[in-house]
Amino acid sequence: MIYKNAKLILVTDVTILLCSVVTSLVGARALGPEGRGDLLIITLWPLVTSLLAELGLPNAYRYWSAKEPERTSSLFSNAIIFTIVAGVASMSLAYAVVPHLVSQPGVGTALVRLYLLNIPAVIFLDLMRGLLEGARRFGWAGAARLIFFGIQASGFAILWFGNDLTVATAAYTMMLAQVISMTLALVAVWRQLRPRWQPSWTEFKTSMHYGLRDYAGGLADYATLRMDQIMLSGMATNGAIGLYVMAVRLSEVTTFAGAALADALMPEVASSSSENERAESLLGRTLRLTIYFNLVVLFPLWWAAPRLLKILFGPSFVPATGAFRWLLVAAVVWSAAAIVTRGLQGFGYPGLTTIARFLSALVTVPALLILLPKYGIEGAAIASLIGYSVLLAAALFGLVQRRQLGVWRYLRPQTRDWQYARLKAAAAFSMLRSSES
Image 1 (cartoon, rainbow, N blue to C red):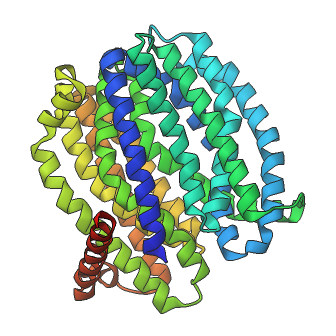
Image 2: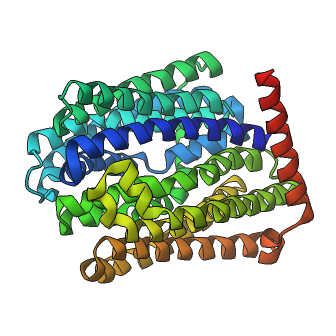
């Protein structure tokens, strides 16, 4: 079941990738490095604020929706109440604080504040996705994600052809896409899970107990993942930010398979955690297959890096080559770490992932402070690699200690891995041939 779900998630991610390619190509050519940097600064803060306001609840929703489906009605009802309260409070605070954190010239304060209206929509979408993914409705959860990128790509393309694509119109398009994505997620939960209005204070406390154990880790994880861009927004030029953003977007292509497997892994482990042998085997094989895939794609992308940047985004983005290559290596490490942390969450150990992600953030921030001023965007990429390496090492250590199995038990290549990969490839090829005939 996990590989079927992972395949569904991966198909969604690949489609999202195609939409992102359109968005990146059009945005890079229409806005240039400076405009892309401005757009990042505008769109970054609602995501950061939403993460702070969510208190780890999306992961709690994934866990309890998978573990005990009868909680769905209470989880859904509480999500609506929480979004109203936390969304309005966090949006009001961000409205007063965020414009003072934006020091780059050319970024309008009014547009920054306007985009903060996205915060409640982001919170509610994340909670609905948590319910859908925990219930293994990955198709609907993927559709809610996909429609955001689809509207963004088509909107950017239409505006570009009409010579109307600016930082402001790009931001308006993304706001519209966010509202539609949230609405689709709500409709999906309503149709698929049939929740009743049943708010529960007891259920909220139970969810918070899991969520808060994961919360600090989620913040630390985001700090490791996006602190480079946050610090660049205050320390680098808009052009450098734009170069780095495109390097990040392109390197993230290699993380899609790992992210898909990680998302599918958590509810599978949560629902079968009582069957220790099956859950352990599932986690180990998923981790190894993720590492194999990422290593296979790493080397050709490394070699072709400057050509890819020039062909896709134009000659002005070739200076991002060095950062892109470091980020490709970081993507391999991040993908493996995502599998291990999701496995720990599925086993019911969010506290261990919090420790691992917190340690990663503690290393990433000083590394950025040291490397970014000296080496620019390449230094930011190296700092990310260091942070992800600490995350993987700490998560593996926690897994081994809690499950009382050696690390080699999870990493040792097995003949069954290759056999399974060949069977999956053969099945995919047969399905392709059938569809062609």
